[in-house]
Image (cartoon, rainbow, N blue to C red):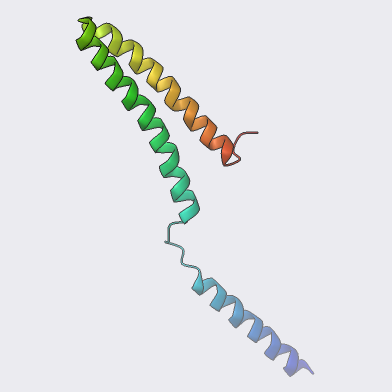
Length: 94
């Protein structure tokens, strides 16, 4: 009877070792990678559009640094707000 218990324990240990080997530790989790890419794109897009619009209005209105500074700040705020909405969608804020 003890031999049967020993064999079943060894089989369970070997199964657990095989399960651990099938899950690679160095592989990137796709869900978190997609989330990180989405959040960074939201932030970069907001800042980029603010800078582009600020430079365009500066050249059009001939007010060199003013519109760039204003729209850079507005673009940064919009980028962080979009990032917050994305994180809320993923369940990080309730």
